[in-house]
Length: 364
Image 1: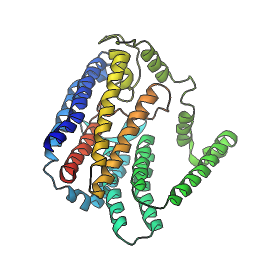
Image 2: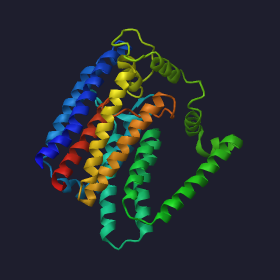
Image 3: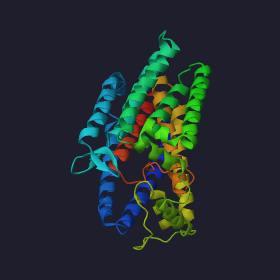
Image 4: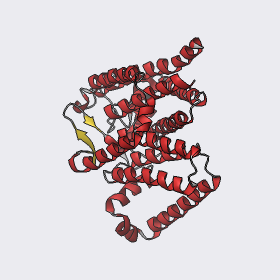
């Protein structure tokens, strides 16, 4: 049994080490693109070191403790989201980070774990208590709505989508009647239809209703591929010139804003080409396979909900980032896990994975 577990753990560590090395190459290349990226490589190495340390430390904790006190983690997450609106550091028009001098901390990333822990706990209790489905659904909706409103004010559209994905993934395992999904789809359809009617035929009224800032945010998402984005044009040009094996490390590269973060997939392809891109996709496929294995072999329903939510989050982030780099999905400031630069996102993903290792150790 131990040999089987070790074999499947290789599905995690081998692709992760590959992504780590690939990320280091991308951060090294980034320093030739713009001076503000000059220290990204050293910081990325630090995030990875902290991440692997967390994997080791999280093996030692009692996992039930986190679920038992998940409400307080959730409260702390909302408090941080509120405080960042007043004391946060603004980057690219969004006040979403605390400037801690040594690094920037993004509380919306921490909220992913806190929200999933709390939703999983509530859903697990719902399975064993005589609680009405509507009460349970209302509770989950309000719990997800509060942080969504707070990140909307930053503004951070990507974080809202993350929270909604976590909610959806949890509800899928909750054994609620299918009619609730039909009702939710119908309400979503009505809201969407109303929004697009106002957008195309009553724009002045829509701007007065939702405000100029939110209107233009939605406008950029709707017209994400209309040929007016220099960022996307340069990214597509870079990808088109990458060739089969890439250009390697080069000091002259067509500039794309947010190269080390949102557009790191483009940066990676410029170095390693389409052959390297296929290897990268294979690495992500192995990671997805590993977490899918963990999900199906988990016997504890509470832990199963948590792994399920993480898997949905992990898959969405890959698809959104890669497809937005190719102009197939809107640009929403969503990094590519383990490849993009960023301490908050990196550390949160290692926390997720450390908790999953801890859970699977006890239940498989």
